[in-house]
Amino acid sequence: MLRRFYLPDPLAPQMTVTGSEARHMLKVLRLTAGQHVIVFDRDGKAGRFEIGSVAEGCADLRLVAMLDENRESPIEVILVQGLPKGDKMDHIVQKAVELGVSAIYPWQADTSVVVYDENKQRSRRERWQKIAAEAAKQCRRTQVPPVASVSDLATVLAVCDPNAAILLLYEGQAVMGIRQALTDRQASCYVLIIGPEGGISQREIALAESLGAVPVSMGPRILRTETAALAALTVVLYHHGDVGG
Image (tube, rainbow, N blue to C red; front, top):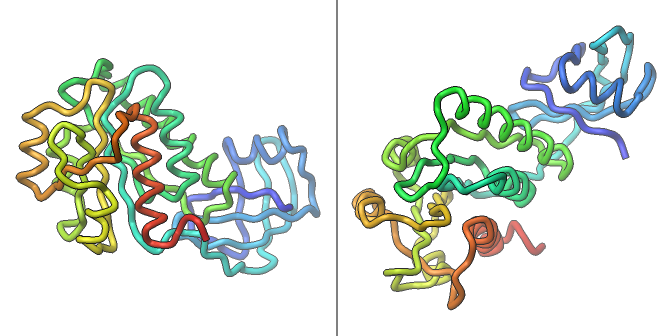
């Protein structure tokens, strides 16, 4: 199986790999001139390339053939994840990308234990975006979902598609299950709002509902935040035939 690499620039007949992708290609995998690799870009296009000349920290690539790959979901699912404790966000980002999430928006909830300053937010976002890129390559996706900067819920929802179906996972006052909500509201874009360990405050619930969010339940058991995020994403994708074949 050919190794996959991600380059943000649009694919071209001649390309140069530098930085972390070049280090992984040349130092970790020890690929050499003449070997073939697959490269995909931010537009979801993929091509088979031959490694040409190799220098310290970079490699020239020559396009052999464009590939007809389409492994992205037919629907858009945006995960709005309340900041959890520890390294749980690393796990959520990795697995959500593997499952097929379209974008991830971390938000500073009223009950979030962690509070990042500007520098910490920047470094965390860079880390999460790197995890997303590695996960996309590993599961052979053709796009790397963006991980946004940490923000508040109002700011996140303001930039979402106004026609999206917004589902708020909240057991406290949910009157319908997520399956019923998906049946009642067919959409091409879904926004899943997940709270952190401490849950979602009444202020945030009122805000989300004022913007069209529907509180839904995942079932009779209370799920951890990292479990709820991945379970809800799976349910939505399964409902639309993207997961499960």
